[in-house]
Image 1 (tube, rainbow, N blue to C red):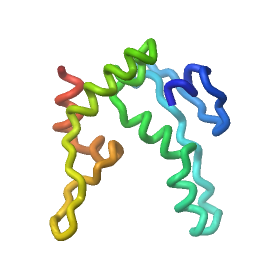
Image 2 (image 1 turned 120 degrees about the horizontal axis):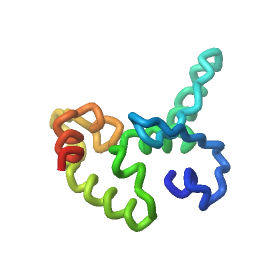
Image 3 (image 1 turned 45 degrees about the horizontal axis):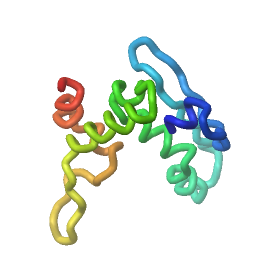
Image 4 (image 1 turned 135 degrees about the vertical axis):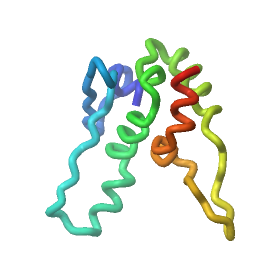
Length: 116
């Protein structure tokens, strides 16, 4: 997403970004056509044009606003080490999946990273 939003690679999925003083750079998730058949919703939800912006927006502002690719890799690596790795194990209850979108809802993990 960073390379797409910086214009380094072609934007074939037509991802658009917004700049906000409070939220920083955020990718726009394309709207879903609720008049479409239900069979369309699963491919829509798993497409790069939807998942990419959702994952990008789930990153802290400091990661999203990295000025260079090297800085992005450093801050992303630091952020990802703060996320617990708890893959689902058959037969055990799962609180979270290993998706950043799910962990975004856990304020303890994101507050820990944003305050460091």
